[in-house]
Image 1 (tube, helix red, strand yellow):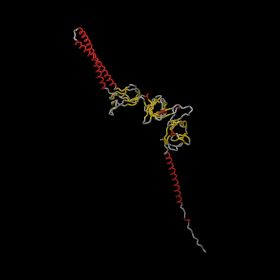
Image 2 (tube, one colour):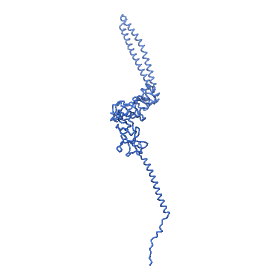
Image 3 (cartoon, helix red, strand yellow):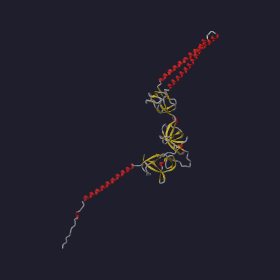
Image 4 (cartoon, one colour):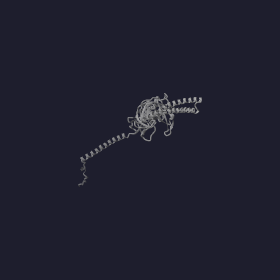
Length: 407
């Protein structure tokens, strides 16, 4: 008996074409390569972005302690000012005909700075001289007449005693003499008045010459030939009130405003170290000259004037200057202070006081030894030297080697 054997589906017909299999593999490889390129590009952009977004910090330079190890009690800033500074003006209103002063010129006391138009003054001077001549010429005439009147009175007195002349003639001679004496007195007073008028006219001519009141340097030239100058401010803007400004360079000093909360730390003759903004590495020994005994209620400050121990041609008026008021010398047993830094620069990390020094765009973590506070600053006895840049403000998480930007 024969059996019917059922046949299943013919699987031999199910085959994968070799071309289709190779195309799918190639597409997978290209996807992997594209993904790798995308990751590399993303990494490059990430590095560039991270570098461009470096944290921003603010840095300051650590300051030196001062000369001889003396502690700094207070810091302030101000300007170089002269005790003697004058804007030289004319005593009269006139036109400038010659300007001899120029900026930077060294002048001596009494040196001519400018000459004004003196034509009117010269005419008044000539009239005063003529008036004095007339007044002087009247005196000899009156003196001759008075002498004659004196002789006539003597004759009349003799004749009256002899009974030849009348009393009336004697009185007339006496009156004539007295009148001439009075006229002579008036004539002498007229001479003195004419002499005074002449002196006034001469002074008017002299006022047309503007001279330096003291020796110094001309720091500004305020008028030009042809301009009108006046000792008072005129209503028009075309009239100058000054000729030139003279500064006595031997009287240069420092003027600073000290907060009244710290003025008790400042006393006359106190040692001071001054540093000009123009020469930050030059420490100039100075001394407190005086504390002005009044306060500015608007700014809550007291003005202090400081004298340089020795002047230098590099010190110029109106220069900005920073000063450090020094205390007594430090005892020998105390460590020397290497620098002063703001209190904000010192941080505590893991129980250690550190500062972050800035160098070549990166941070260096420095462990420091801190001394006594000096106003808003702290003494640093180890770890930082004067002149190094330290971070005072910045984001959290600063660490050694971090790349940063300076504000």
